[in-house]
Length: 311
Image (cartoon, rainbow, N blue to C red):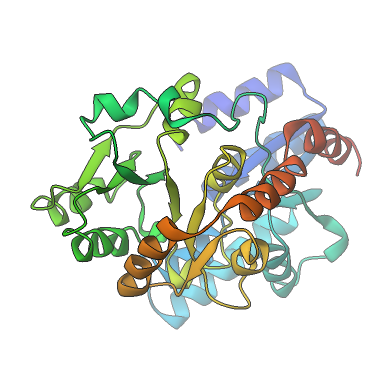
């Protein structure tokens, strides 16, 4: 919020045709709405994460009265935007439940630059050498935000169950509020390695490190977010294991692409990782690459532009 006066001044000075606000954080919405009104601009909210719901489902907030108040403020803010774009069908349904007009909401998945991220042989990833991994190492990679919605503690628990598999390593790459706790949880595990968040120019090298991508997610956040990291995983042409329960959007999306295990179940995740090593992934990976073509920047950016200016 400390940047709010600067943002408002820039909007008023430049007088754009469209003001775009991204959630999270919704705290920026009042400034975006006010500035858009002052200059007569169209206002658009891009919802990446239903953060109010997530704060109560997997975050620190509790209490019926507090939640009712928060939901009321959220709805008032959301209703002020001319257009809302969200990234999944289930998130769209959740917004409609908040009594927002369905005509105001459009679904447009996060895009991925498939010219920058594409299948590459393991030899193309210098990270194996940087991490001093054995030549025959089977690498389970998580690359992304390290927060409570990702439920990464079950990956560490799964790694503990797999500690006797001497050629299997779990690599966690990224930053976030859970990083220190995860490092403490895994301090005695030689099969867990951490990497800092990587610059975008190294992303293809990082994703090529994986023999298997892992996509854990908190049960409470299942349909409140759709992980943006999924696009990169698919574009890398690597197998994926995800924690996703039936009837969730992630489960429906990946049912014939990824190996799916129940959310919150570290034993099932560990068993799934072992099973993944033995599977023939050819057809699943091919289906994933076809799916990611529909999520490419070349496909989705024209649709996004149309929504910006009047869709």
